[in-house]
Structures are given as structure tokens and as C-alpha cells.
Length: 112
Image 1 (cartoon, rainbow, N blue to C red):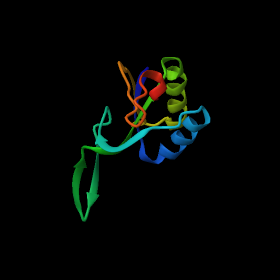
Image 2 (image 1 turned 135 degrees about the horizontal axis):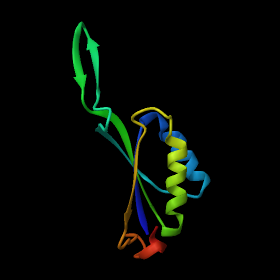
Image 3 (image 1 turned 90 degrees about the vertical axis):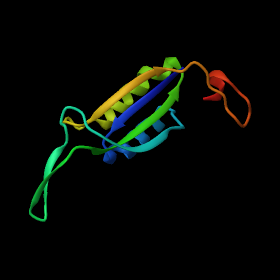
Image 4 (image 1 turned 180 degrees about the vertical axis):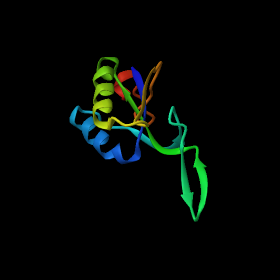
């Protein structure tokens, strides 16, 4: 089992969600986050004063999938989230040692 964490631009969330639904991904956790990568934020002018916006709004998705479905899930997220511009985000793949569905006590991949 794998946990896929993706940091994407907020306006791409619906496209990514729909693309994942097309390949059979039913559940995900979405969190609004702030951060920066290589672009290191940007400067804006507000009421005549210039200030730096260090942390940009992003969305973090977490999706737990079987190991066999992990690569297809990553490819789907990348394809749906890509704009080709700086700040598109990143995808991380982490191992999951155990998973338990609280309601039914199912464990392992059956709990996904």
C-alpha cells in the first residue's frame, strides 16, 4: 500500500478530483496549506506599499492506494495538475505499513 501526497495549485483541485474518479479512486483527504518552493513567493503592491508574499496558498491531497495502483495515480495527478508554470507542485509517494477501517475492523488493502 502507498500514501500519495500531492501539493497542487488550488484551482486545479476539481480537475484532479475528476481525473482520479475516472481511474477508480474514491476517497481522498484535502487540506488547504501554504508554502513555497523554488519561486520563493512574490512581491505585491497594496495601497501603495510593496510587500512580499512568502507563503502561497496550495492544496494538499492525500490518497491511499494499493501498490499496483500507485504509479497510475501519480501519473493521473501530474497530468491533471500540470499548467507548465512555476509552482505547479509536487507529488510524494510513501509506504503504508498498516491500514484499519475503524467501522468494520477490516485491515490491509481491504480497508482502503
